[in-house]
Amino acid sequence: MDHSFLFTKKILLVDDEPELLELVSVILKEEGFENIITASSVSEGIDAAKTEKPDLAVLDVMLPDGDGFFLMQQIRDFSDMPVIFLTAKDEAADKLAGLGLGADDYIAKPFLPEELLLRVHAVLRRCYKTDAPVVKLACCLIDFERAEVNRGGETIPLTAMEYTLLETLAKSAGKIVTLDTLCEVLWGDNPFGYENSLNAHIRRIREKIESDPSKPVSLVTIKGLGYKLNTRK
Image (cartoon, rainbow, N blue to C red; front, top):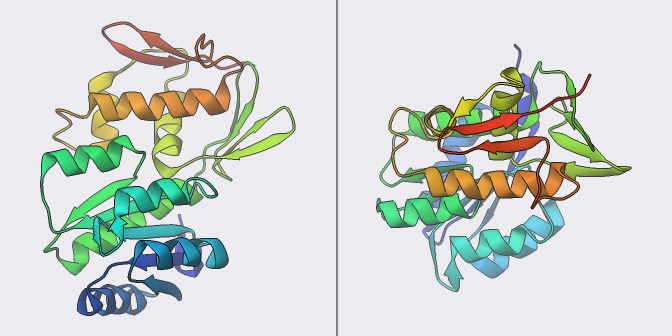
């Protein structure tokens, strides 16, 4: 599939280290990304996210006037753009905190340019393009081409993580998809310890696709095993 259109996506970089900000900008521009916006604090990041309306945010965790987790929560008030955290602290607690908030990926400094590009491309592909069809559920439609839910005349965007989870479940519609499988799809070959983060994403998906998220009929839990997506003809 041709993903060249992804290079037109607008990327917001927020980091308080000028050298790193410049380095990441150069890496992305040399790869072919045309629209890069930079900010060096939480306040600048919020302003840039509101005015520029980027398609992806790469956020440093440690910022002079707060942290990337707080910045992401502020952004979520008005945007569901995918978020990648960039941090010098390669600690499991920070990683799980970011993913638990609904972040789409996490890169620890120092990193190779190839790793950064691989993760950026992967998140953008998951969020903005697919060959999957429209899937009908009990009270909504999932449009994978547009990465959104259509429910009662309302259009609700999906984050990249939500999109990936729903796509995986839809491919096995009516069948149980195990917790390990879902964690591996999202976080790779070492999914141990991500179950709480997975549950957080499932809760947010249910808020978008269920008429009563506390009593789900489309995305149901199979206790001790995993989840199942019930689709309609």
